[in-house]
Every structure is written in C-alpha cells, then in structure tokens.
Image (tube, rainbow, N blue to C red; front, side, top):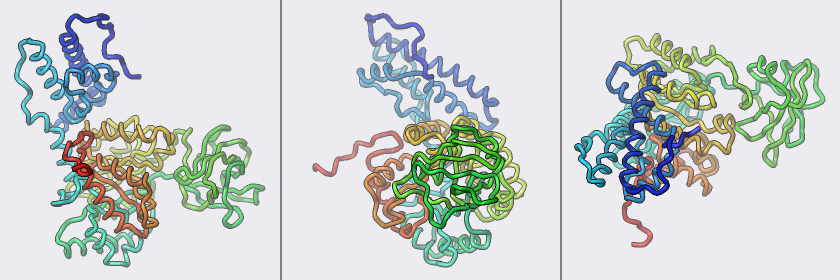
Length: 499
C-alpha cells in the first residue's frame, strides 16, 4: 500500500510554503536513500561491477520513491514551476538532488552546486546502450523504437520474405520455437543471413523457447463445435469413453487434480472463460460464462490458463533443452517464456553457458506472463543482467488473462517505469496491429496502441498475411510519435495542423 509522504501532518497554514516544501523534499530524499539501500540488500547486495551496482541502486531508489503517495507533493512542486519528478525513473537521486538545490536557492538558503549535468543522462545512456546490445544500432532515419517481427513458416521457403521485412523496417526477426522444427528454423536463419548480406545491414535473431505453456492436448467433441456461455465442457485426466459434454485434456494432466469448484479456466488468450462447477473421478466439469459471440472452438495446441492457481511447473521442459542446442548457435537473443523465479533465470544461464563455450553471453529477454513474474521482476532483472545482456517483454496475451484484463493497462505502464529505472529495454508485445497484419486494415484502437508502444525500446508484431505492410505502417507511426514523445517525456515541437 502506498505510504503518505509525511508521517506527521504539516501545519494547517505553513508560514512559509517554500520552506515547508523544501523540508518535505529533503525528508523524501533521505527516506528514498535509506529504503533504497535496504531493498538492494534484500535482493542480495550490490553487484560487483560498477554499472550493475548503479543499476541496482537506482532501481532500489525508484521503488522506494514509488512506495510513497507523492500526488500532493507533485501539485505543490508544480505550483512553483518545478519538476514533479515524473521523469525521474532512470536517475532518481540526481533528480532529487537537483530539485533540492533549486528549492534551497529559491528559499534564499545556502545551496551547493547542482549535480553534474552529465549525471542526469547516465541512466538514459545506459538504457540506450543495453537496447543496442540487444537489438543492434539504431539505423539512420529509423524510429527510436525497434521493430521485432515474428516470421511465419513461409519464411523458410520464400527467400524474399525476409528481405521484404527488412526493407519495411524490421530490426529483429522472431522465431517462435513453439512451432515448426530445427530444419525449418535453420532455413529461416539462412534466409535472414542472405538478406543481411544483400542489403548490407544486420538483423538480430530472437528465438523464444516454448516454456511450460499449458495447452489443449486432445479434444473429444463433434467437429467444429464451439463453446458458448452456458455450455459445459469437461477437462479430463485422460480421454476414455465419450462423455455427455465436449471433453478435452491438457499437456500437464496433473493440474486437473489441483482444481477446486469455483476456479477459473481461460481459453485461447481470453477468447473464452469458464469456471469449475463439478469435480468427479474422471476430471472437472467447466461451465462457460464468457466467450465471443460466435463461440470458441476447442482445438489442440490452444492455450489454457488457470488464473486462480499458482502453477508449479518446471521452468524448462525437455523440448526447451533440445531447442537450446539450436538457439545457442544460431540466435542473438533467447526469449524466456513463463519465467517466474530467480532460480529459473539461474537455470537458463547455466544451460546457456554450457552450450556457448567460448562465445559471448547470449542476450536474454524475460517474458513477463504471470503475477509471480510481476512480483519478482526486480530480482529477475538483476540476476539476468549480472551475466547476460537483458530485456523484458510485456507478454500481454497471457499476462492479461493471468492478472485480469482491467489491470493490464496500468500493469504495462508500471513495468515500463520499473524497467526504465533498472535501465533495461522493454519489448511491447502481443496483438500489436493484429488486425492490420491479418487483414490489411488497422482499427483505430490498434493505431492508438501502436502509438503508445513507442515508449518501449522495441515493439513485436505477430505473423500474418500482411506482415511486411504492417512493419512499414508501424515504422511510420513510431517515427511520427518520436516527434512528440521520448519515453514519458513530451517533446514540444511545432504543431503541424495549425501552422
């Protein structure tokens, strides 16, 4: 729960509002310094290298700062035309120190010098450097935010597709290891490298391991039957005799035994939702209470989420271990699906190091998809950056289902802020320009979402028939938004519509 800034309320009518404001900001700075250092110690202490230590300490300071309710303080600062601390994520103590010097001077007190101007950009430069490590140097004339495009299977057989995507503005190509196989991935990699040579520029390769994603394994139901609100389906341990209702199994059958009446079950990234209403010796009966108007088909390989359960699944599956053999020698970045605990990161790092003998550390992107991953995000980042270039993906598909759709908007904002404080690049992912990539026409809400994504260091598009056109469209939107905003900082360039 956010704290009030002052434990002891200020006088009802302070005789000198400026002096009172200065005292409050000094108190705030002292508390942020104290609590921030305590947070770093609770995470295991400062990393040995100076850059890692500075990153950890700034993250601790930022989380300490944001543990207070600063809204009234911000209004008081704004009344004097001063910084409201709204852009301090990457430089917390420098921002507070600069503010205190200004307040002392305004109050007529003796004030020391301002922090060196260069210190105010240290965090920003480190974030830009980390983004370059992951996604490559920013191309001249390209938007600040890089574009990550998911390759369809056709990229293995159509040598021109990768070239078209790069010409449209793709900076990084994603290969989803949940689909296809090493032979197809190898053909995709070869096509990308050929396009690089032809165009004379680099394109990073991002491969994400499938992870312990819970999916439908098999379905027993009439062909093309769809579940709609009010209909019942059975989640069975195994498929046996035909049940009176449609029946399906999942790839982690032991989870059926953990279900209780009232638990939620969500299908296909939120396209349908059901609740457990009965449990018997063969499985759990679910009653659908929400679905798209035309209903949702139960199909093998579609995702299944259990938002009310904290799943205890292995962070890496046997398939992931096999896929890492290919990834470690062909990719520039590995996406860690369903990472949740520091021990998960340590396990992946150990396996990467064993396979990368003598090669530079592979970049890791932590895909944040569960409430536990959100809670552990500071520790996950600090463990990952200790040994690997690191980014964070806001994987909005599973994350929205797991935390609830109403919370997604605020959660993606908070992850953006936290990662900026940790000087860690963010990928804004899942259903960006989804309709455009699929059908060739963008919805108005998609365009707004794409514009909001400009605050991240990278935006991911999924595969679709119009993917090259989608990449080009997204590059145009991002370039336009670069004129108006950098992260949360509004740029006041001239308005073009009224000149």
